[in-house]
Amino acid sequence: MLELTSISKSFADARVLDSINLSVAPGSRTAIVGPSGSGKTTLLRILAGFETPDAGRIVMQGRTLFDEAHFIPAHQRGIGFVPQEGALFPHLNVADNIAWGLDGTRQEKRRRVEALMEMVALDRQLATHWPHEISGGQQQRVALARALAQRPSLMLLDEPFSALDTGLRAMTRRATADLLAEAGVASILVTHDQHEALSFATQVAVMRGGRFTQVGTPFEVYTRPVDEETALFLGDALVLPAELNAGRAVCALGDIETDNQHATGAGRMMLRPEQLHVTACAPHESEVAILDVDFTGHLSTLTLALGNEPEPLVLKTVSQPGWRPGASVRIDIVGIARVL
Image 1 (cartoon, rainbow, N blue to C red):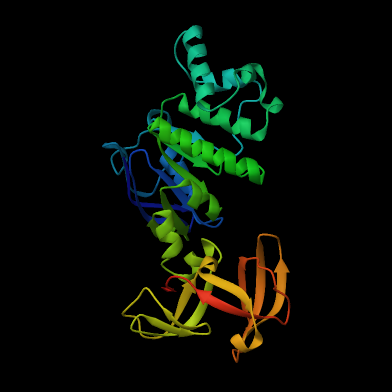
Image 2: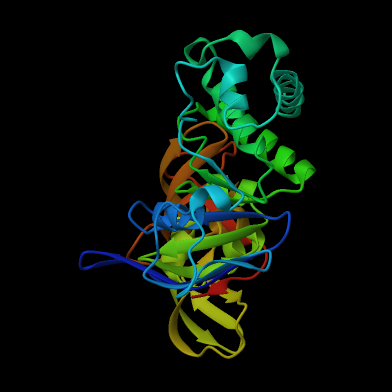
């Protein structure tokens, strides 16, 4: 549906995007995730037509939007754009915001607006309200309806949920994903929130320093990160030095199976917190002891002394009864370790 080839962009002497390649399937949801300054928003603005790349090629549904000989302006691309915090027109009510840019008679516009409000689950009574009279989540739905009104082939979402509180953010994100799937509109979400990216997308592209370090399914990039920095950015991870040989890793936690049969010698391996089950036990059953417990409800952060290891192990895991400083615990590992 969308193909980006060798997209590069510099501002003055700073290279912001460095030979970006990306494929987006019809009806799919792609999340571009990375730290601030990694180039995410610049890429989104290039796709929208608000910025021009220095080099590369953009093709959408067989139509060239940009290359050395072509540049299709933003208003002719058939791409919807939902910015941060909605960016609604404050002098227009909800219905007029959604209808902005629509062609047709007043009656045709009204019918289209009513259909769009129903599509994004907005009460029809809100049509005459001003943007400041509705909640943040409702404002985002209005912005989404306004973008959908143009019947775009592709929807671009620039951190549209960042201004919402946690509960509303998750609900609005899920509703938006469902709505775009039902409408059959491919979408690209830009975010610095790794949980948001993993939850929203069918494809995740991890960006760092103007490049994609990894592109894959949410499960793939989470469980099989390409390097340590990507692993730690995508969620909590336990990364340990290890001696690698024939698909095994000898580390502070013992002898563990890995996903790499060929790696040998000194290296590093990763486990996700959900792979480590920590349970209280009698002192003679384990050499692992709790140094500190930071209890936060469902999760606790444990600082553990591992036998003769000089450095303590810090691990965030599901809280269990019987955890207190000085208590002995047993660590059981589920699955295999990722060699980095």
